[in-house]
Image 1 (cartoon, helix red, strand yellow):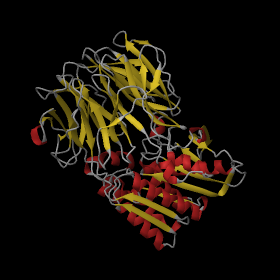
Image 2 (cartoon, helix red, strand yellow; image 1 turned 180 degrees about the vertical axis):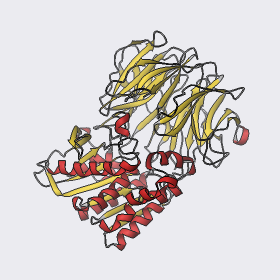
Image 3 (cartoon, one colour; image 1 turned 90 degrees about the horizontal axis):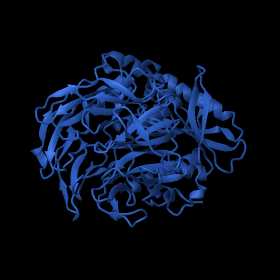
Image 4 (cartoon, rainbow, N blue to C red; image 1 turned 90 degrees about the vertical axis):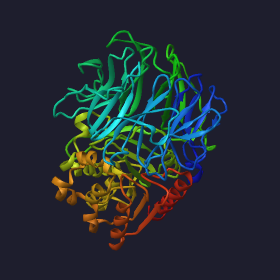
Length: 597
């Protein structure tokens, strides 16, 4: 039996990028926060390349030089700065601005890179290009934006950039930006309809753009946009499930796309045999779980990707494009915990109040005594997200210590089509909370479950779901664990980062039009109903859900006589990323649950 510190010391290797000479860069959290490492061959001894207390947020090799760009924020504030790491270990700060910077990719010659940033005005993002030797204010402003802009990469001849604009999580537009003139060609004119466009890649000739979209469909499919007219053609349908990712090498036309089948990733590898025709190759020989983050090597003969399963911690695998043969290149430690002790989840469904089936993952300890097994109902954030069968050391700790873990994808989750994601919009918000009540009723019918020891746990939007479940259905819960959650939709929207307020109002409702409704569904305004002991965890620098949400719910619940334990970390943001803080926080949560559950 291993303690919580041991489980939280299980490592992850992810976010791979192939260098021009075949070196693989990736991020790994061996030191307690993700840093950049490199390795030359499968199973080779990795070299640590960055040495910071703060997390590294991405790493991207130059296509022509043994140098890479990486990002880093401070204390979880999400104001990512961009850096260049040279082969000799020298690090150059490229941006030096008190703003957010979104990496937009290297040009094909590696002489420039692009990014989006809210330097000019905090609530909007502009597009910049900058030389690899330039720093600070040297970037060229290419496009002044008026909203949430990000970039999809340089065209094959480096004369255009793909610009992605999000009006909400499910309403996007795509344009091609001429780097020299600043003129944009709008590619996705869809009127007032909410249409998703994601995972953008240029085609080999620069005449087409490949993407995932749900235009005229309920699920995402692979499409090609004409880079001049915006005319769209279907390349591969999604069918019942979302085809939710594509990576394409714009020199060879080789590509990898992924289909999300009930949370599991199914990969297809091939190459373009025409504008909309794909010649497929054998499927990659990687474990069945969740995979993504494709990076082709020079020549696109192989690609790296991150793979994880319920019982395999996260590592980087490299796949041969022609044969599908795969090798694991990294060996992130399991902290000497035998992998065979890890427990897999079962994909299940349960009926909710309106007859709809809600998908979920359910994991039960190997030895679960009838009627005596406590359950943690763990709700994902977003809500535009999905719980999938990926490795969680915290989940494995709970399973090893006698807790079952139930992970519902309540209405509003992604992965099950456009209609499902909109079932919780604005006035339907509390229907998602009712899905949690139905989950508890389903669990109570399981012979192994102790119906008096069911815990609600969740982070971010999942934290709101915890608080709402505790106030709406107080008799169901033995305890609640709220991590960076929303307690009051009005104060949340008033204080969240200005760059994201409009997107969040599109999901939750606006302060101007829906204030009364937002007040009515805010758990803080039903606090008199709460009965279960409550744990509240937050980061002081959280720019998404400000720490005031934690402070007000903890204070009001304590005033009601509810047992409350609050923990605020001064050097964290939207989540707890540093290992020493994670150990302290989750050891405290375990102690709290042991006491009350």
